[in-house]
Every structure is written in structure tokens, then in C-alpha cells.
Length: 70
Image 1: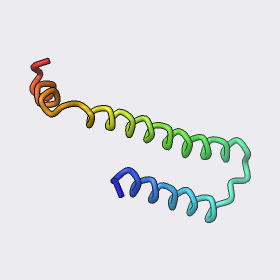
Image 2: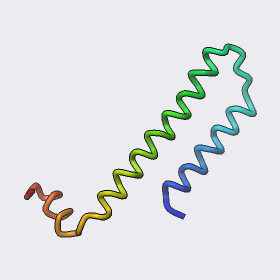
Image 3: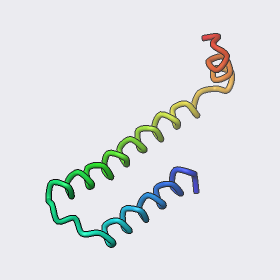
Image 4: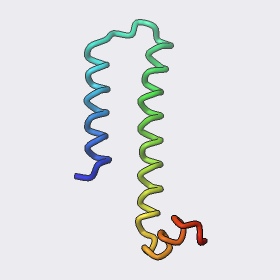
């Protein structure tokens, strides 16, 4: 299991806890909470894709980029 899977499991538990523990009566507030959970998931997926692309780069290029040589 990679760290992103572990983090997603924790976030899913948080979502389940919030949804089961609280009743949001105001439809607008519920929409905002649902949007926030969806946005976090979208941003996390984007970060995973960026890191996957970086991990595919050869180590030599990563070292040069890290030292500002590119």
C-alpha cells in the first residue's frame, strides 16, 4: 500500500464519520461540504499524477533539477 492509498483510506473514514455524525439541514451548506470533499480528492489525484511523472524521470535529471543545473 502506498502512502496515498493510506491517506485516502483515512480521508474516506473522515468523510464517513462526518456524514454519519452530523446532519446538515441547510442544503447549501451540505453542497459546500460535499464540494470540499470532492475538491480535496481531485487535488490529491492531481498530485499523485504529478509525482508519478516525476518518478519516471531518470535519477540524473532529478539530481540536476534539484541542484538548479537544468
